[in-house]
Length: 133
Ligand SMILES: [Zn+2]
Image (cartoon, rainbow, N blue to C red; front, top):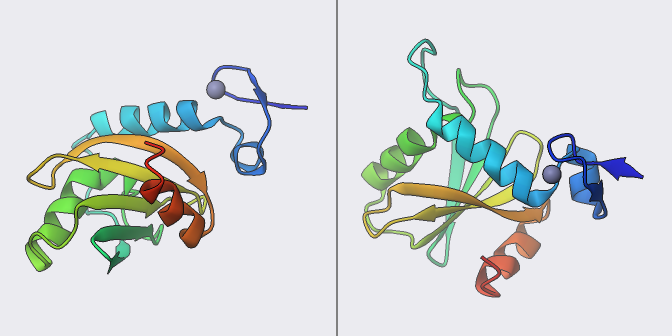
């Protein structure tokens, strides 16, 4: 049996076991990271994105000075700048290869992360449309 490294509860699904953390703890950890926007990090996250039927899909290339998790406000703002008002929902794949959701406000600004817990894009997209968040 594998246990969450954050809350020590037993993990059941394969994605969480890979990551060592359950979905709620992973979202909490990411939200904490997003709050810790330290100024001693230079440069921004390196990312790619696609927009699929109004859903922005961000991929963390894991090459930038920061992770997308750590730099989410900048990442969203720069995509908005490239393609204004082109998406209503946002998911992103972190450096572990796991998709999670990003809740945004009506201006497209970051509000919070929420768990999707999928490594396959189609499944992640299906989870958004199923309204699991
Ligand atoms: Zn946990």
